[in-house]
Length: 495
Image (spheres, rainbow, N blue to C red):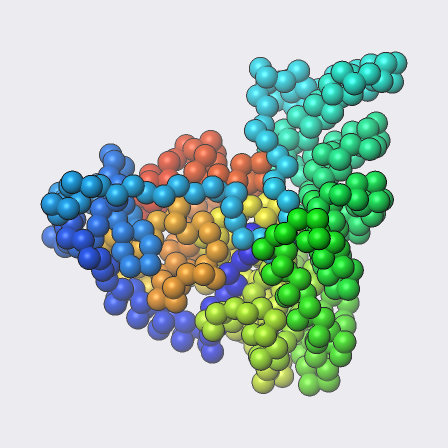
């Protein structure tokens, strides 16, 4: 999923002022005349689109918001709304904007113990997998091949669901040793490798596969994405163009255009490497700064390893841009002050040393890199941005009272509405969305702990529908979670 980055800011105080301004001035507007009367005496004029025992959802300019039903006294509906109640659009939780083009998610539903002989007592039955391999060796029939493939796929799915993508990767590798020419197994393994930033391994797997399956757009799409992750822009563009020749794809066309813009400036960029990072920067003016950036990133890396119980194996690419080049390459909104689209991109014009603000920005974006690898790109944006703010040391304390009032008044978008990218969000909603995201992660840390946050992250690869994940891991529905976060803010800061 494409992280929205961090809002552009001259300093921390300016961002707080911006957030305060939005919190006290954002007022829902709609041409409909439904009136939601709250128990605290306030009211919201909006078009109610859904109401159940847990929440009231209403439409405002720019999207839909929700408020816990427990805060509502009663609703007066307009005659037009009563005659024709509008329906809520549904969303596919897997339809997220990605930082690189990828084929559809190759994971189906995780098998239950009763459905699959591979899963026993809450674990993969390795003896059964060996039995399937022995049967296939004795009789390599189509049916035994099907059973062998199915067994390893189910084992890989189970391990991915358990938050063990490395274990899932190993299962696909074992299956491909026995069935080396299977396209679906190849794609599933390559997908895991690319989303885990194991780019060299993906290239080694996909290059021969591209010769074996010359008409597979998915193979060359993944191959291009692996080359892009390795900063081999020429090969990335070449492979993505091959995929486009096989099958037109708007996301691929956008990726090619972006990679071509990057290639135009890459020729004069210098490099600085460490065990965990490759930093690219534009010439002598930032040479000293690049070394300080590297030291700051390495310190944050070790801190995140401890906090998130995960250590990325692959080198993380960081690009330091002049401000105009950052805008030209990323084509991001003006409010974006840094971006992580699989590579950390930071504008640094005018800086000669790592300030406290820049250090926070770097740690914020590095958190996104950790989350991307842990979740294989399937993390709701609000969770991702909330965690990044938490790790950079941000807090809702300055804005607590205003934020609590905004929640009580129902002026904030629901978490479900904040699952998608923030980049396409109207600018007037951005600050509120970041503040609410941070409040949610503060609530999770305060009422559970960082261990539970890590468990949620590790469970996301096989369950990209966060509403189901909430129910299975925390026994909360999305509306109940909304109410819990609201109660946390009210209890901590009052109204």
